[in-house]
Length: 187
Image (spheres, rainbow, N blue to C red):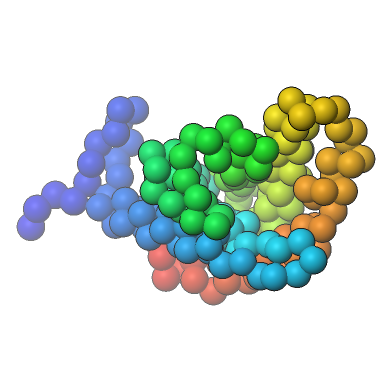
């Protein structure tokens, strides 16, 4: 039987199955970014997919899935919300939230590595990851938006965070519950 591992730069081994899972979840994040739920402020299922990726795949593979998703969008594959793509999206007003997904995944990876993969650790790291994503994305939004005129923190939070808190917390709860069921089958 052929060897199905790939040695990485730092010497760790990745099985072919690891790479397949990363690819599948990168595509899942893309599909979920296209699902737009119309409300007063429409929101996507992208956040759910990011947290499902880290919850189901674990910190390392989940972080790589998020990175692959972002790289696909950066090179022009329309994987971002509204079937958008390119560096213009990443450097635009909402690009900080997309890049913040990496910070969320890294926080999850670090916390679960340090404290174990208990349910409470997963949920707390997802919530803290969401807060980090909000903070980074809002700061990014304010910097980019300031080219059009100054904007206050309160206004930026009211536009970019407040409408999404409850839906995002529901998505975290769904991702945490789903990861508890599916994670044993993915290892």
